[in-house]
Amino acid sequence: MNLCTLKINSVSLRLGLALIPAVLFFANRTAIFAAEVKPISSTSNSSNWLQRWQAENKVWRGVHVMLGNSNAASGLIDTLPKLADLGINALVLEINYSFAFESHPELHNGGALSKEEATRLARACRERGIRPIPLFNCLGHQSWSSRTGPLLTKYPELDETPGQFPENKGIYCRSWCPQNPKVNEIVFALLDDLVAAFDADAIHVGMDEVFLIASPHCSRCKDGDPAKLFAKAVNDLHSHLVGERKVEMLVWADRLLDAKTMGYGRWEAAANGTHGAIDLIPKDIILCDWHYEELVKYPGKPTDYDSIPFFLEKGFRVWPCGWKNVQATEALLDAEQKHKHERLLGHLCTTWGAVKVRDLAEWPPIRSATKK
Ligand SMILES: [Zn+2]
Image (cartoon, rainbow, N blue to C red; front, side, top):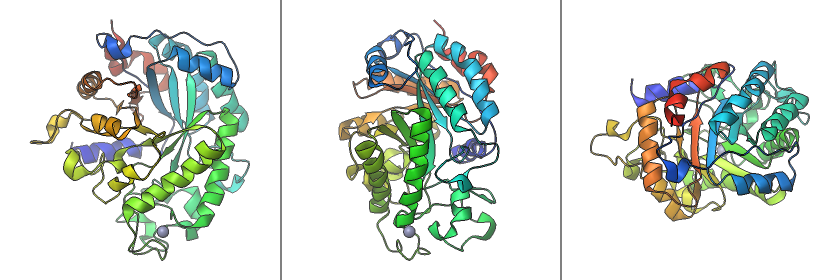
């Protein structure tokens, strides 16, 4: 299985089902992962809670979980004590359209998480000292397989490739048009709903694996610079979320890496010209730098996760992310140790459906990562 296939498999789980978490922190990497978790007894997203969380968690130990419905949220709440015991202090909760948006009720999937359920989950997280960070996929990932997501189904005029690729054949995922002003009008309202429901002080806007950008099928974007268009999407979101809503903003970092110079494949780095956006976006954005396989799989290429020092030297905070391959995670953790820096936040473990929520504490990567 090559990385491409592997990544497709991982993502195929995204739009599917419920989900799960995991994490990894190796005890012998004490310089990065030694901080002790101290539950913070608060039930609100007051600035006081956040200040205490920041003071007591110099290392971000995160798990990324997909929440496709309320059952998944309930299961996660039951699992929180075990996650807290393992030292987890942040959860990236991928919601996308599985939420009962008050601003746009026409845009949520069936079985969506209610506002009350989201609030209950967020409160339960904070009671365990875990920072909840909702995730909504922006720009790309607006379809999977033959199924197009709610936004472009309800508003097909917002599609970057309107009327093209029937049944989504021949493409990976649809994108929305970053230059259609109606996109922001709708999406900002959706993000506001999530921020309110989770009382969020940080939000992840996705933006990974955007392949359809500056499309010749878009009257606005054809002949455009992919880097500038990607940066516009990032900057518009940043202006709203960080500028107006005063929350922190996270993105997957793959579109900000040049596949040619970094030595990564075209999934975990960009081969479609978006990488120049790295110099066009604010430095306070947190970059989630995901790498799921050992880099030795790219003969003759860098083997030390050079994206980490690259992003650090650019002035960003970096949150490296691994997945289910324990050896790859160990290699990534070693690289994190080597490049230790105050802006290298810690480690985020993605799960992509590889483990059920109730089995998280026993999942081999977690057991391996947390063993003393
Ligand atoms: Zn466009």
